[in-house]
Each structure stands twice: as structure tokens, then as C-alpha cells.
Image 1 (cartoon, rainbow, N blue to C red):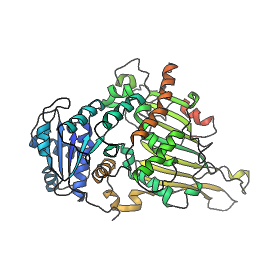
Image 2: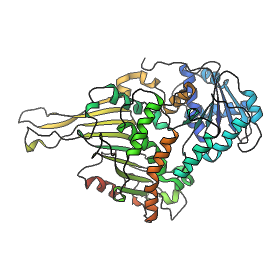
Image 3: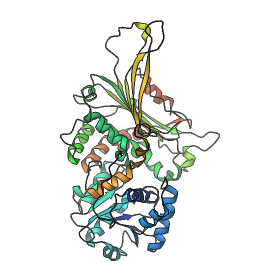
Image 4: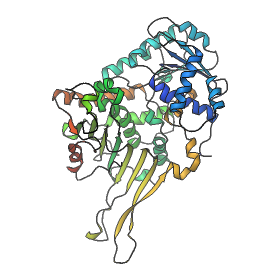
Length: 483
């Protein structure tokens, strides 16, 4: 077996917003898969809480339908029936007093007690206050908060202060599902578990690093939220920032929560301000098949970006002079999340000018087809001289690990189980969130002050032409987004 299932301690998990989209698509199906794997103990209990009035049986029926739609994979009906027995439901008024005493009576003493805030950030303070006020939470309880964690530095600080009034930092789990992906964690294993890479992981040997998160979907039903956020707030400030930290951070003294998060924080604080010439914003236009971004968000004058590309630098001894290129967007030609580490050319080619330019590239694929490739240069087979070509040493989890790769939990499954264990390694700390906003805010304020309008780009493309020029000016090219 690839993954060894280690059961967690008995727990009571309360999911606020249990009737919402995230709970139905990710949280509850993920918990069901952990139940099927044997990781959930027999006396674990999951309690849904929301403003919708329904009975335990009605909630179980809703969860049954959600798992059938979003659960993925094959399972026995008996397993689903067994999982549903662990579920209960309470109608809760997040800003009032209704339902809290009834919820308290459902909770048991002596068990791990966790509260998942799958709600809008505006409700975090009300929930935290009532959890303490009604005696549902103590100093051993844990709270999980979803993004967006603020919309700027000021609001993030306000949220941190609100949560800190009721919970210690060691009790707060700010979730970013990218950190729960198997390949993201393998990035740390590749860097710090192999002597092969770490000596080369610096500006002396690495020419540049590309981080791409491309999506083929539109803003869809998130239009009202997304138009107030944009790609910079929705993706760069959190997801791409976390990937940047993991690829660039120094080796922590130990693989422990604060050791890892200390090193990530150092990376964010070492980021230089980004020159506005090194930023490209885009917005997908309409085509013959569907409306464009402005129609999707019902705002014909929207200047919110659905695409961002930027070049940044980290001012420390390891990375001085090495550029990091980040890009993310919607309605692009393919769905891909990838980190590409592009090594420098050999200092001298013994094969002459006809051999061409060849570079080693380590590409870490986060999705789809999770895995890694390492491009190496070999001689092209056949007579007629020394002709060189690049080939990829390719390792996908599905091929390398076989059927056991299917047992690897997805991001939400892993992160929720880490909450129950009390392991904060893969969660963001408050000062880390604030540092990320402190770097992001001037970028957003700059283009707002200049009145910039995003560049239009065709759906199904690689983004605006200006993004290509961002790399071309430096004599580099983006890696192809594959369809």
C-alpha cells in the first residue's frame, strides 16, 4: 500500500454552512471517503449547522444526494448508510441566540471538538463570539476558516483580531486547499529529502521559475463575488503565494508547523515591490459560443481582471537575481497547475553552435495528472554527428504508484484530518496572511490609481498578448498550457 491509514481520535465536528455549495461538493464527500478508508473512528460525529430548518433525516438525505453527485468513485450503499448514521443537524442563527443551546447538548465532553466556518467571512466574528459565549468551545477546541481571509490588509487584520478575541493562534486553522494537494507536499519531499536537488536550488543554477494555475471555466455562478475580488485577490494572494513560498523557502529546522511557517513568512517578507511594467491584467472577451466576462458578472463596465501575470523577485542570498513568473486566469486553453523550475544553460557547450540551446526543467504538476517531469538532454539516436534533443523523465502518480494512487486523499480530506490531529503545518498563520496582503495591496492600489483597464483575451487562448511579451522582453517563454 502507498498510503498507510492512521485513524484519528474520536471527534465532534460542527460544519457551519453545512447546506452550502462547499460543504456539499467538498467537505462532506471528503469526510465520507475518510470514513470508507477506515480513518474515521466509530464514535466520530459530524453535525451540520445552518440557517435552513431541517431535521436530522432531511439533512442525511441532502448529504446522501451530495455524495452520490460529488463523491466520486465506487462505494457500497451499506458504507453510505453507515456514514450517514454519524450525521446530525441543528438550525442555527449565526447572529442571534436560536439553536445554540441545542447544539451544545449534542456535543460530548472529552473528545476533539472542531468547528468548520464554511460561511462568509462577515460571520466569523459572530460565530466565534457565540461559540465562546454559549460554552461550546474551550481552549482545546479548533476552528477552521475558509478563504477569502479578508480583501486587503486592513480587513485581514480585523479578522485576525476578531478571531484572536476568542481563540488562540494555535486553535485557528486558515485553510488553503492547495496546500493539501499531494504534489504540493511532495515538493517539500523532493527539495529536502533528496541531495540531488537542494545544492542546485539557488540563483547560481536556476535561471527562472514559472508558476501557472490555468482554468478553462468561466467565473460561472461566482460572478457577484468574483467581480469584487478578481484574480489577484482570489488566486495570487493565497494559492500562488503559497506555492511560491514552498518553492523558495529555506529548509526548516524540523518538519513542524511553526518551523515551516516561519520559513514561508521569510519568503513573503523578502519579496520586492512589483514594478507596474512587470504586471499584466486580462479579462476574457466574448466569442461565438458564449458571452464574455462582463456579461457573466452582469457589469458592462467591469475593470476586474480574470487573468494576471507578473514578474517578481525575492531579495535574499538564495534567490537574488532569479525572476519568478506567476500567471493565473480563467477561460484559458487548458486546465493546469504547474511549477516549472528552469535551470541555466551549461556554462560551456562542447558540441558546437549547431547543438542548439538545451535546458533542464523540473516541472511539478499539481493538476491534472499529478506528477513530475525532469527534462534532460540526450543524443538523438542515429548516425551523422552529435545531435542533441530534450526528453522528459516522467513520473505521474497514477503510473508510478498504480492502483494504490487512488487511495491518496484529496486536499480537503487531508486537511480536515490534520485539523482533528491538531497539526497546523499545512495551514496559514495570521502573520503570514497579513504579510501576503501587505505585498499584494500596493499592486492593486497601483493599477486602481492609474485607472488601468484589463487587456481583453480570447477564450481558449493562453491569455493576453502582453503576458507573452512580459517573458519575451527577458528572452524567455512561458511553458505551453496544454489542452
